[in-house]
Image 1 (cartoon, rainbow, N blue to C red):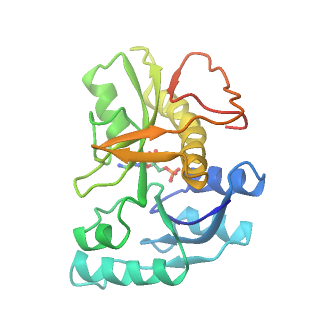
Image 2: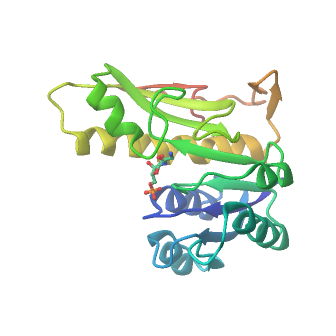
Image 3: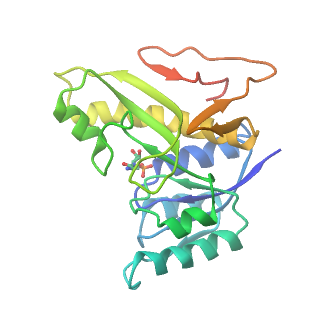
Length: 224
Ligand code: GAR
């Protein structure tokens, strides 16, 4: 059982890369039908090209409003056969019309422990606030920015002496593990949503990996 996905990214695309790598390694059962960016020149596009995955730019600049852009976007994603839409550093809010086209089928990653510190500077905002624990979150997407039922979170201790770039490196490294893991649960049909909560069906052969200096919950399974 594998799932058709499309990855939307506005920037460098290290999360897109992690997903590409896990799919290529056969650990993530996903067929990446398209990598799309709203920004020409986004690193994610080059990563897709290198991996031989179809890529496309849909520049938001010429569109009069978000609804028009999103309806074109939804048409492209439907045409490529994507079942799950994976936001990987995609820095645009999605309209209700778009989300209605893919109900409970859009997921996002954010570099903070949601619902705290949403937005484009989640990691920096958390550090500036002085949190003692930060991390990252994968969630189903609702209309409000960085909101929706949580699938998996990874938490790391924050050292007040640490520089932001060092903290963000640790968080990114965990993002690259929890996002493919969440997608694999989706691919396997192991996630259900009830009352805004996600429930993970247990694996028949659980092989949970242990993590040092972080808490990941639900736990990562072998290969992630
Ligand atoms: C990631 O850290 C992701 O969590 C964040 O953008 C970065 C993209 O990095 N997303 C958000 O802040 C969403 N609010 P990448 O392009 O290297 O994958």
